[in-house]
Amino acid sequence: MKDYAAASTSTETVPVATSGDVVSMRQTVRTLAQRCGLSLVHQTKLVTAASELGRNMLVYGGGGVVRAAPVVDAGRSGVFVEFRDKGPGIADLELALTDGWTSGNGMGLGLSGAKRLVDEFDIESGPSGTTVRIVKWGR
Image 1 (cartoon, rainbow, N blue to C red):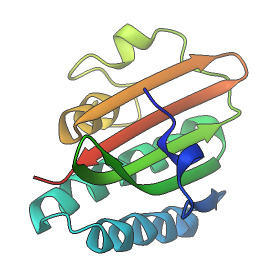
Image 2 (cartoon, rainbow, N blue to C red):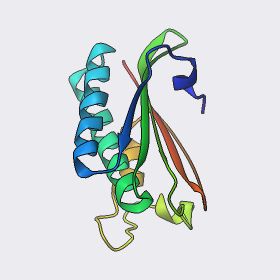
Image 3 (tube, rainbow, N blue to C red):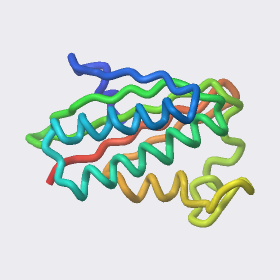
């Protein structure tokens, strides 16, 4: 996936180290979605995905950094959000992306549910951390 934030002049960066930071990040994403003209339904889907991914980043990756930016591509506008942590990584990505799989602490809806809520989803994970990039396009 393209790193839309790198090309944007208005990227918002939110460090996430506490549950309160997840709430702040969620509000940042919602405000950006509103500014980009996403419908209420698309805003809700994006914010729900961001909340799940931000919580996962905090719980499993020990926190990290979220970057969010407005994006325009091929005449469409939307919101790009990147979640980057320096945790231990995800041992089995394919399994972690399976509907219903859980690490034992949740309902198993996090990664697969977030993926279903957005239009573009990319994940990279290794022993030095995990990066998830999502895009929700306006319709």
